[in-house]
Amino acid sequence: MSLLTRINETKAFLQAKGISNPEFGLILGSGLGELAEEVENAIIIDYADIPNWGKSTVVGHAGKLVYGELSGRKVLALQGRFHFYEGNALEVVTFPVRVMKALGCQGLVVTNAAGGIGYGPGTLMAITDHINMTGNNPLIGENLEEFGPRFPDMSDAYTTSYRQIANKVAQELGIKLEGGVYIGVTGPTYETPAEIRAFKTLGADAVGMSTVPEVIVAAHSGMKVLGISAITNFAAGFQSELNHEEVVEVTQHIKENFKGLIKAILVEL
Ligand code: HPA
Image 1 (cartoon, rainbow, N blue to C red):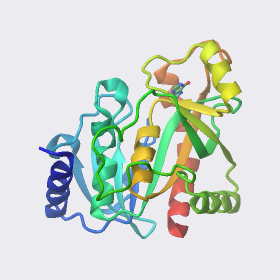
Image 2 (cartoon, rainbow, N blue to C red):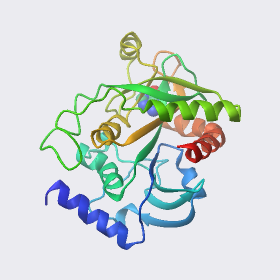
Image 3 (cartoon, rainbow, N blue to C red):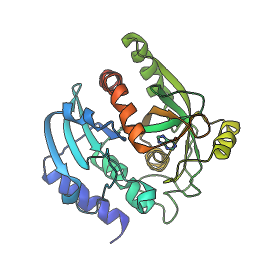
């Protein structure tokens, strides 16, 4: 079955479940899925029940799609995403973004846990731009003309106007929101100290194992994007050791600010 046919099949499945005209897609990263619990009049669907959908295998990722209202906006929230390092093809990793677009989402709010290159644990960072260090691209292969062009412009992939709103809202709430460049790697290894020194030289402020493929696919189809990284650790070489338990634990300290910020931003987007 072609990618387009699968997108349309999944779209029809979700519409039959009552999901109509979502305005925003929300991808909630490691430890950040709780926000979906605040969605009102929610329709909740297990990933396992959705045709053509991937499987989420990582601790801290629930594996549920939650549709409903958040801050008065219709959202389609993903509690848990698919990663390349889980063995998923990039087509699978980015499939939910395709379906969000097909269902009518104009914007995507994408979040992640990331290692800080300069920024320390507990920092919230609006992504200003990314560096694709995965050595891959989800748009390789036949282009879906219905979604966007063969050679998409990435100049404003992280939509400036969305980021301006995020900064304004953060200031009003008294939440510190930094800005910076996210460098996306495949994982699953954390980086070596030498890699982090190299990434710093390249201009990266945060490093993580997600987001880049999803944002490429969103930008391809003209979706506006807000990316927020929760910095959970100093990247390799700047702290003694790295582990996923710490990543999830730090998100638990940031999550109240994180949830408050995203909800307030949604009102204004
Ligand atoms: N590196 C890559 N991904 C991450 C990190 C990190 O240090 N922390 C959280 N996700």
